[in-house]
Length: 352
Image 1: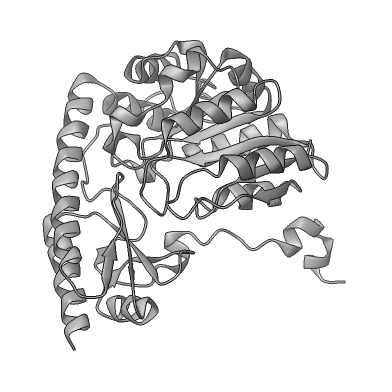
Image 2: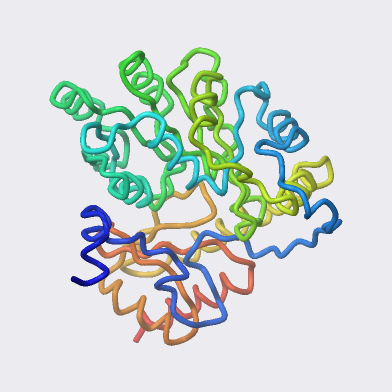
């Protein structure tokens, strides 16, 4: 018997999430993981490492609660937003019994995390304009009484659009006492006016995923947050592993959330939004390229022969991302030099 045969059946059959680093290739222009181009400096004391960290460091929780405008008992910090997904699944879904609902095209880890735990996935694709299919979701809820979590991403990855707030509220209303709506706001700093944190006061079945990976330029820190009702937070705390926040992570995250850190983040977000507008304008002028409106730190484009353009970009050391959307590429917003290089290269390829 092979070692693989000893593994759980779900793991044997699982197709792992194709992270940017797993399939990225090699190059010097990395625009495939929606990372920030800013490499900010932080200081770490190096003290207290002989002791286990607090499960939920008070200073960090207080800082993020202040930033998000919520109470401290509505916040849990996790190892990236991905661990928040995992904890919600573990807290609310019985393996081989319950299911989750996703609305593709969207972030792939919702389905991968569910499958990894033996939780079925029901798919209700977004509409042609990439909005929630409320009627389709209603039908799925009627058909499957075991749907416990509904994942919604806004700004949506990879399409870049915002989900209509009225539809989010309608979904929350329909699912009260029935399911948790998990709203992924990983990119909300690029469209802060669209946050739904105010809905936490009205809907106990709302959980909002946040991260320091994108606008805060801390993808390597692996620090995320979930905002939710105290009831949801307490259930997540029951299943979170011990000591989830390394001491250096808490120190750096607290600096990022300080007054100076927040001012720097907002300035850098404005710079990236300007670069996004530059890239969007330039790509829109190219024949055969459709640039979809983007509200995060990336743009989705559709074009003929996207696969060939993707391969040529990679050979030239410019790494972007292919997506499940037909004939599409997702381009992260880098610094101006990186945006200029990618734009010039695509323009050249389409002119040949």
